Image (tube, rainbow, N blue to C red; front, side):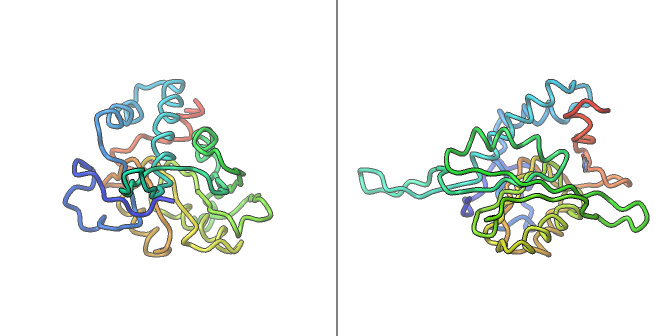
Length: 228
Ligand code: URA
């Protein structure tokens, strides 16, 4: 898994922000290709077909960044590269997390399995509540990549990690793959689970009064599945 490569200097969503000087968090380099894809996702006028296609393309970048490996080249120099070989279990937080499964299938050549978690907010308590989960039997001995495009308050994300660690997966074997996080969500994730890793394409400063990320990209599941 990604081992703390330094953030790119034009990493503009978190530039000069000491709160993000965290070696377990990797924000994709904010190059023009990624920014053009994120502009499509953020544009309220983007239709569901283009939104889904663009998600696939950002997903490929996230998955590519999720595993780094040092190899020694024939000149004897260490090269920090990317290789997906180890057994990995992708766990989608339904329903939006399933949008990143294809990127995992494309990106991993080693043994791959998928688990699912359905967490929804209980109407009475307002707390994230587990409704369904299914994992491979040997998940405790695998690296786990949690797929969740949006981390707003971090409540569902923390609930999902609770479920996975209760299955015996150490925090150090968990990576969270995310398209857009809020600053508050990132803080709450690392406060609860300092040992996990996080790969994201962008971090936004704000949440709206109904806990949507701002500027954000709206309700991800509705836009991806065309249910808005
Ligand atoms: N989930 C979404 O789909 N969008 C947000 O802005 C926050 C959480």
